[in-house]
Length: 148
Image (cartoon, rainbow, N blue to C red; front, side, top):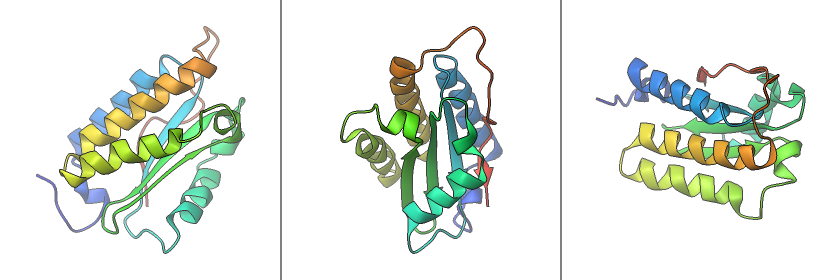
């Protein structure tokens, strides 16, 4: 059952494992990198906080600049989706909003894990169109959820 105390505790260990496995599945189709970050406190400017988190997690240091961060703060109901310049320049207008809507629609129903997994798979699908998986691909960033 989901607990209300902090955003990090909103997901069980098993749910976090499911999300990490989904990231691995999505990344198996692409050289792109996907991260999910849980912030227990949020910010008055979630996009600014997501951008700082993106930098702190080393997501701008990927070889092809094709990382995507899904930033979440459940306690303040904040969602930000941020792509590095390599992918941001290639996706169609409205793509990031589509990912936001997947998350928001599932979260309204309390279905956090499914929403995150569906968003991750959609991001992976789009990344694979521009950055297909290569045999020499190296997983540059952890698939585990990051938390603060």
